[in-house]
Structures are given as C-alpha cells and as structure tokens.
Amino acid sequence: MKTTIPFLLILILAACSNPEQSTNMEEAPAAPVKEKQVEETPKSSSLPNYPGMATMYIDSKDGLKMAINLWHKSQDGEVIVLCHQAGSSRNEYDEIAPKLNEMGYNCLALDQRSGGDRLGGDNITVKAATEKFPDQEIKFIDAEQDILAGIDYAYKLYGKPVILVGSSYSASLALKIGKENDKVKAVASFSPGEYYREIAPDFVQKATKGLNKPLFLTSSQAEAPAVKSFLDAAESSNKTQFVPIVEGIHGARALWASTEGNENYWKAFKTFLNSLK
Image (cartoon, rainbow, N blue to C red; front, side, top):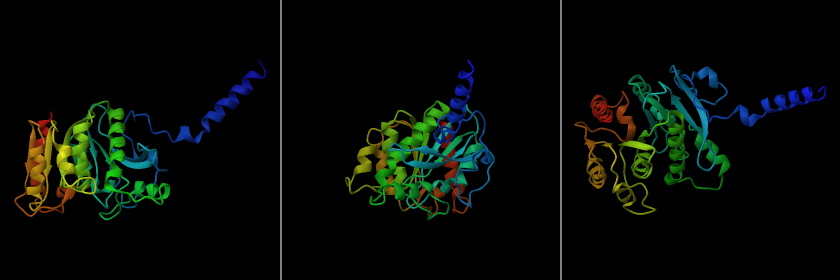
C-alpha cells in the first residue's frame, strides 16, 4: 500500500494538467457565464461588457476552432442562434443580442469562417481558417458547417430546438438549414438572396421549397421583390415578409439603432417571435 498512494496521486496530478481537459467547452453552464470566467479567450477590444455574456470557442464540423458570443439568460429560456453577413463577425449582434436577452432569449452569435471586420469587431474564426487552410479559398457555402456546429452546441446547451437567424449570405443558408435540420424550430432571414450561383442560379429558392417551419423574412425595400420568391417557395402556415416603408438596409443591421426605421423592423420581428410561444 505504501507504493500505491503516491502512484494514484501522480495520476491525479497528471490528469489535472492535461491541456485538453482544461479547455473543454462541452459542458453547459449551470449559471450565467461572466466575462471574467473566460478572460483567457481572445476578444475584440470593442466588445461590450454585457452582464452574462461570454466569448468562447467551440469546434466546427471539421474541427476548426470557431468563436461564439453567448448571452445566457436562463436554462429554460428559448435559444436564438445568430449568424452574420459577408465580411462581418459575431459582433454584428453586439447591439441586437442584449435586447433579445432582455426579452428572455438565450443568444449565441457565431463567427463563421466566411467573414471579416467590415462591420467592426474581430472575426476569430476567419483567422483560424486562414491559418489552418492557407491555400483554400473560403466560400459562403463553407460556413454552413460552422452554422450547423453552432446549432448543435446550442441544442446541447439548452436541450431544445433553436430559432435560427441569418443575415445576407447566412440568411440564405438559414433557409436551407431550417428546412433540413430538426434542431431548428423557426427561421428569421434578413436579406436572403441567390448568393450561391456558382452551385446553381436558383440554389436558394430550390433549397427553400418545402420549408414548413415558421418563417420571418425581411430586407431593404429594393430587395423585397427578390425576397418574396423565397416566401412563395416556403410552405409554412406561419410565414411573413416585412417590407419597410423607408428605404431600409441590407441584413440584420436593420435592427441597429442607427438604421432608419429600426423600430418597425423590431416590431415586426417581435411579433414573429411572439407567434412562436
């Protein structure tokens, strides 16, 4: 017995020093996660210090480390997965997610590998993808696996289907994924379009055909006629398209306070969310 106890202690100490165990993000938080608990995670210097918000890493479908911002409200609350537009990042939702959080929703804003810092913020996943795949051209469709990983993570975290929100190219992917994925209960699509013409000229319209889940569509005024084609393709009994009375704007920025008419965008979006209760 004298040699057994030190040996066990060595095993325990070795396990505790395992770097893979210390960075495992698979377990759901038991309580709202504070930023100070994840200080080791790289964050944008412009990232607001919202109570209950944390930046963390999860694995995409191919193992690429991707960043997310999590606004945790309650374990029983509904969960919204927020996907950004081209050249953007999870920080596109820095102003939007806290408002949804106040309404009772848990929110996960993703950094997809197709993005950047055009709307501010810092897309960590783009940097990781550039380092991991230096010779690969990252296309919009490559981000689908990142969105799927975000949905899986949110579903595991809260144990319920998610509301999927997309902006621009990710709004189109949200229509496709929403139809195909049982872990998605509803889709909100801000300025979807045929952004995948290299695959097929009507790729998104065909991908939307047969979508029978609650659907919210919106855009700028100029984009509205094209967006209506996706509304017509969907087969949901709960589907709506909001067209602003002002010029409007492209993507989820419609909900930013700096966007003219954002109050009406919010009113229409909240009406849709309330219809899901």
